Image (spheres, rainbow, N blue to C red):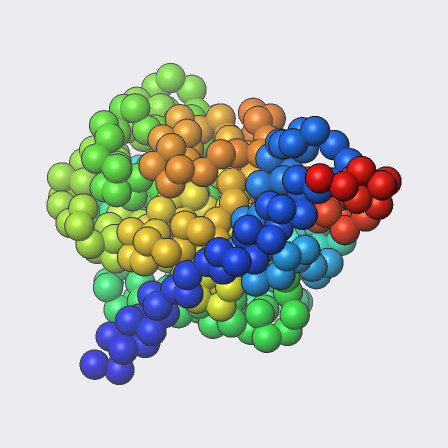
Length: 350
């Protein structure tokens, strides 16, 4: 009962502030430019206003949460890289040498690396140990994890979102690391969207044609073995998902619950976003799509969410790299709102 009440509370998402949105739109219309000339940058300001309640929002402090977990389905040969790379990359994050940490440093964002389910031990310095279990089970042979483990991972993410909000983070991004997780993400995408596995499954880490066919077959078999309920996002996350995917779902729910805007990255964080929206539809108003990745399922998920990506750069790295790359666009949007003159300041009233 306590667990149910906790989850129920997490899904109580505040409505957007329509008054702040209206004031932000009016402000952007008064700036010295043609109406709508800044395009998506104007919509960023208006949507941020609706989330935060501030006509001209402050997003000076940004953070990217990178959730990490291993996947038992790698036993089926679905990745071009061995499962040990998850642990190696966690060390790379710790040293600040991964793409997401390099980009975050360049654009002034804080990074939290959260181990929610890798097989690595001991963990490198600076990595948050929130391990629920040492990797998921092989979903091609049975459920990846239990519902209880899924809820624990969900809570890891939700707790971090609350902590960030209380510590003054104003714009968040989510990313991940887990060899095999494009397989799990594609499986969850198939459950949530009802689209065919063949239409959703991409090459992930760079599979050749034979590897891609094997990956599709493994996902199809996993869905047949587990039969996840499309009407229950938690069932899909548990049976064919991953610990880091569940944690990102919880983070997104927690962020929306506390009016913290979230920039999603590629396929894996976007499938977590869709799971969160299916649990609590009000979450969608707090989400921004950073880019459209090269993975075929990503476009399907973005369309389902009704989110327009800011960048199309053919990326498929993950980690939150695309989300952090979009941060300068948010800075540009807010800076124009704060610093551009209005027509009335030029003496052109009305």
